[in-house]
Image (tube, rainbow, N blue to C red):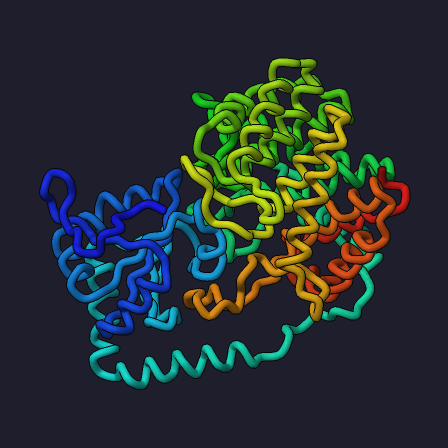
Length: 493
């Protein structure tokens, strides 16, 4: 986590005033309670232009710095390093700017703020606490108690069976929402970008992966057409970065114009894998060249010294697939070496993998890391044939089952230690993310087939039963569930 750890430090190396940031910790919230201050939470990512802009503008203003340092406990979170905090507190994008009580309840906030807007937010928060601080704190405590006592959400049933109609339902949704003019998928008003008259375009990689898997499993020509039409448009338009390779996160225009300037390793690893698999399936040589271009962005990230385990594992998988398609043994060796180095740095027997590595491992016990590192280990096993890697894959999932499995629900929580009295704010509360659970179900099913393990298959089946009544409410974002149902078909290898 970036930011100053010394709470009294309010000047930089040149002696200029700066916000005295501290890390997310019980100590920060205890200090807020002791000093009767609010918590100023700022969640950002290094690669987002909006985060950098706010940091150099509003957060560098002397009036903002003075007010935050005097009247708030300032907590800075890097979303890449702490996705568990971001998942609970993100208010619609990066950066997220939130004012919290000392119990971790959100009073107010938003995303990016100008200098004047931020001063207004801070001032209104202080006025509200000054006028009715006791009532606000009492209400926050009441909300915490009520949240712990609330029943299971609608549509989630630990005794339900998996929805066998999920594949046909998702196929219908994807084909109905595909943009026949420009490719990709037509999104609703809530997702519209800056060009409101035409809407924005997002990657929707799980939906495209679903169409690919479906077309391969059932020779579905309509699914194949929707897939390739979208990949053609994404590969030929402004979504691609001509300078450094790879793909941007989204475009503001429906015709894939006005690209967002940000790129992520997770998105690019997924698209690299998708173009690689589609090229191999349909013999598309043009997709091979697009995959080569994506590698210009992905490969240096695979070899990076600092990394997030889930994204790095995805990148290893994608590079291995690309190496096979391209017949590139050097790329294969880079991916294998990078995976070995990653595991050496973040894996500890019986403790799974850490999420973040920057000279030393930190942030242990997140579900997504165990699942994606396990999937990458299975990919390495497939390439090398070594049982060491299939054993590693199973060990990681056994660890997740031991510390993150919610037996009452029949699904995984997103992090170990939810409910820990030392956890802060919403981190005390378990989340059961659908996408990561469905990815976990896929890995468990593959491990079950490798080892003829009925227990692992039963756990996967319980996950799919738990989300059977809720995934449709997610629309296209429910694609991970349909993908898992495809994997669960007996004919899948």
